[in-house]
Image (cartoon, rainbow, N blue to C red; front, side):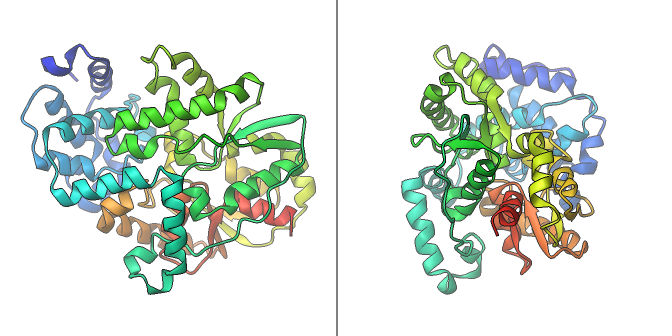
Length: 408
């Protein structure tokens, strides 16, 4: 695709990156076939190809309108189009750049500004979000359905192991997950303990930066990333084997620290090192497959459906590892029809675009329930909470399934 960027962006790092991405696009349209919003709405401008055209216009200095903003807002950033694209177009990076420019030029209505500010200021701060979630769980039966959907039923975390092992890895606790589902990280620590690995948490590490960054507070998101690097760095220097991610939404972001902070001379090298050390849970446990098979030994007899989050299968390009490990351990696990499509959670999308989000959730649940599963498992807190809001079938993190079999 030929481009002619406007002067305001042409010689910037973001402009050069966007230009390179745009030039890769050949407008073949393969991406539209796997875009969830295009499938629902049938509008070319609500598919990747149309949005790329809109962003090209923005970068070339054409007038930006609220309509352009709306089409970009409706994008889930699921990155399914990246998996489909034969030309390797990095759509996710392009839409981050395009949205920021559009938001700088098109003021949002007051109601949108208030909601977005609340999301980016409350969710990443555990000291604010955790008590708010606890209050919501206590009052859950009294809340309207829309709020109940965002407040999962409280599940106790159980103990975290205290044993010291020679092998050590870092664990990102995160921001919303410890409040919404504290057992996920506790279960992960117990599983690793059973395998002779100690998971260490850096207390000053928090939100991975994704929430602010994808709400166009990119400076705030980068500050969250720098804080995590500072918190982790002494442990990185001490030789931890990996930085373990139990939420794929966090994992895809931390793996991009090296790119996002490449222009920061104080953090570029450290960020690249952190990204290189970062591994999703599903990338680590296959190394222990033989031991897990021996320890599990057919203990999981439920019929399970696995929903792979977009941040795992499209963002990190990790496919087949979770279900492969579960099958090797004797679990009857299956993927549903159209397993490549987004469930509609997509970070804050379910709050900002509820109508589309719930359509996608209901479509996903219909396919998951058609498998006849007794339990649905996934790998991201957002997907788990969103799916659970629409079904009585239990929805858990897949590591909790393994932990429950190892520690009945």
